[in-house]
Image 1: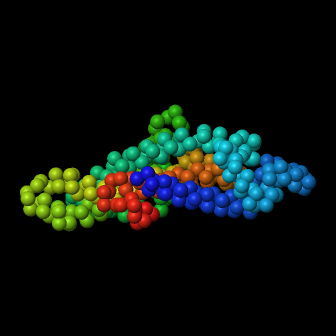
Image 2 (image 1 turned 180 degrees about the vertical axis):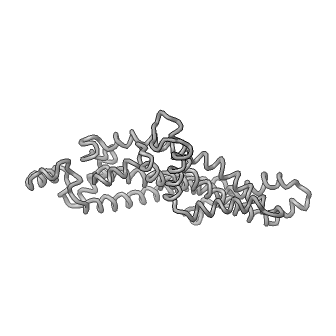
Image 3 (image 1 turned 90 degrees about the vertical axis):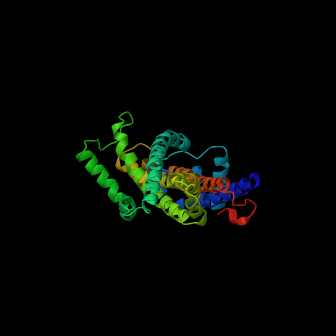
Length: 316
């Protein structure tokens, strides 16, 4: 297990290095206005001197090396427009807790609703009319087919108009947390329900389940002790990925409800062309994504004894 985790960690670090280096290089092609607060008022000589002080005029390999040296020391540079001369790491540290709180809350709600819904749909496939499966399928298809931006707007419109919730987020008002968390939860609810239903239906048609039924075991016992346990194993690897999707979805939701989190911060940084801040945020999101995939592989290997950690096909 230790050897496997070590190999996957090294691969993840290499992937992260490649992603950040590419993003770093691409940002060097962005307009230089992003490095100065009062660019339009500066002379050509002032701009040249400023770029030299920032090291932007150095050869790209030198800039990349300087960036990684600073990153190892915990230095992501300073913001040039969002908060002038404020360390990027300090800005991000203020935003992360709120985004993680909203994201993790929505994920917990998705698990608490999506998994029982998937079980209900799977068990309903064995009933006469299959009403539960049909209703659940309609919900899943609607959520999967309709662009998330559309139902996010509908939730905000009808939630504020019909239910009287505030359109804007207020950290000290619990009622303003409901609509953003609901918006982020729906996609994962449909995701978990759809895949758990599929895996449980596949498992219920296998020989060991037919044998259990032939022995007279109650359907509820078979579903809980055998079908669900085996169907949940492949679903585990998607849970860390859904954390990523939740955080990425928060980019739009946080902007929609004016939530002062990482999503809104990235949008503002891009609009202001604050290249250093954008660079730091991309690093955070890329790190979360890679760690999520790594966690999914490790959880899958731990829970499924059929996977051999010594074989190459054990990881992605």
